[in-house]
Length: 160
Image (cartoon, rainbow, N blue to C red; front, side, top):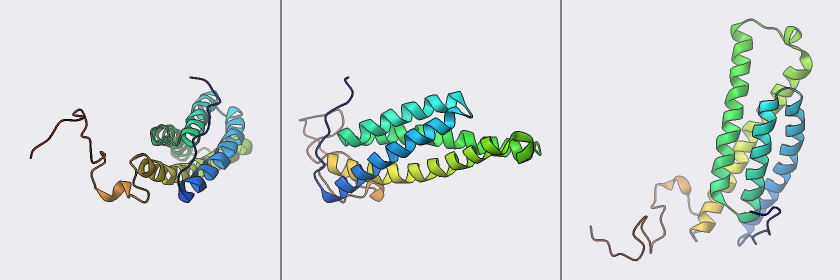
């Protein structure tokens, strides 16, 4: 796999909007990644991998990369929430821990929560485009497979 990849052409106006939002989100992700190195090297590595997934998602209109991004961002968010829970459980004050790291944790928590929402909206659109149904509701409970295929049985006739 070679990076940078050629960018796929977004087929719909809504898809173009989501690609633009993800491009902006990637820039903010890189800034957040720099902030995260100041408080946790592990979080820096997670954010680096997440930035790669975000890049792959918007250049290839890949809904699978958005799911991976949501998973990694969610695990980072959970880690931050557990950190806040530990502060509360052990009665650690902000002044004891340090104001600077605490503020960075709050910024990263807000960023990750918003990023998950933005990427989820892009996921819905990218999946709809991939299945040729722009405007299709991913959570609508419909059949996720294309009409002319069934998983594992391409070209076979199915009877119910």
